Picture 1: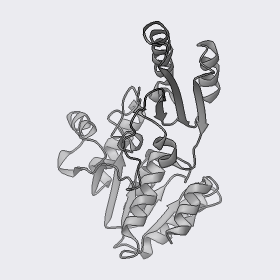
Picture 2: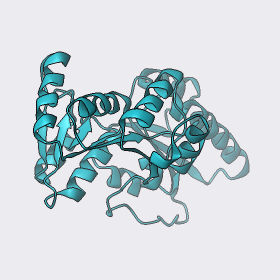
Picture 3: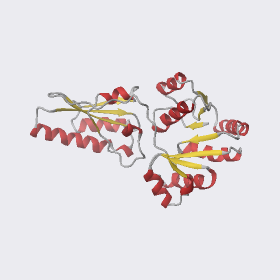
Picture 4: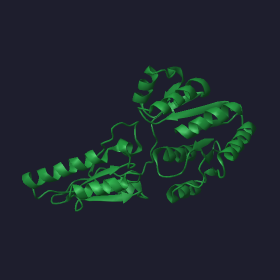
Length: 273
């Protein structure tokens, strides 16, 4: 059983699908989407094309938790995987109450907020069989703060094999810089745009024949602020936003340089891709 909050575009959601696909058909995985009305077409289509069995939960929180309890009670020998705080909590509590033998949580960052840290540490130390980190730094940092290391494992993110090859930069071509990730504070796109602005100024003075373009792919709550900052920095001519690009491989294939300005990460999907 793989528990996912949603099937909206995101790292944890992608990993849920890739894990289900890797386990299918030998282990008959069941992907449970807790907020069953929240999905992107590309992820829903991926699940259908891969013949992944999906349970889309609907209704109140109480009705969904009761349904999960009864499902888990009937499958006590199952292995439950989860990746994020909400589904980790469900995995730990409902899985433990229903007597499921293997409950495996997930940590996908090297840092956690205070509230998430306290909840995740309790789940890890007392209710999970183990926790899978997608980065060694997170395991090390949280281990120093009370996470039991004997219950901590590191498994990096999985990516599909159709990623683009390195691009050669031909003479007189436009050098394309790309970034990919959610539009949230952690990704720090404003520093990225400051860097592009500075690069544009240097380019004009030192080598005006060289042209650059900056393509940003993603989605999130900071989209209006990022669009406004592009205008403020006068970068409309060289910066473009691709909202939730449907084909990540195609988006990345046009780039020569990948730029990440994240303030902190696990080992992110976009960097690996």
